[in-house]
Length: 195
Image 1 (cartoon, rainbow, N blue to C red):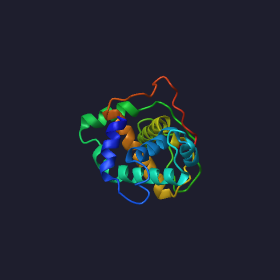
Image 2 (tube, rainbow, N blue to C red; image 1 turned 90 degrees about the vertical axis):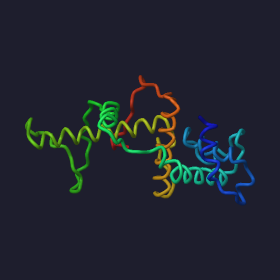
Image 3 (cartoon, rainbow, N blue to C red; image 1 turned 180 degrees about the horizontal axis):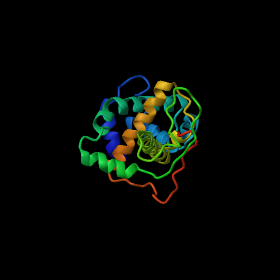
Image 4 (cartoon, rainbow, N blue to C red; image 1 turned 45 degrees about the vertical axis):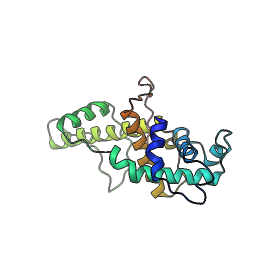
């Protein structure tokens, strides 16, 4: 899969001053290593295999992330179109676990815990719970596969969004390549704050 990802990203890489100092492959591998391990830019640069400065690692992460979000995401992230696809995804993400860890905020829609069965409030609470479970499962899967998402990302908020988006692209590519290396027996760890 790594060779395929390199082949997908390489054509979009710009030739510039810093790009000529290291190969495209090494640039991509540095970024992929960041996604997989969550290592800091300095630690990645000090890696004896990569041997890159922190600045080079930073540029590599930014360039590869930008390429993935701009060029690969439209081909590898899509919403389900058919009822069959929607049901398959629902079955894959549904968890029967409820959590009442919500802060008291006037703008936050929370479940109605004491809703009477069969009422609109009960249906709302069920849908709310199902939606929250899907989001928590998605976040948990991404954090297990991409360790960079398991900790605070010290980047500009726009870049953080791109990193998450690029991680979703990589996750979907892993599915496309039938790389299900996540251990289903490993417990899904979800923070109380839902991240």
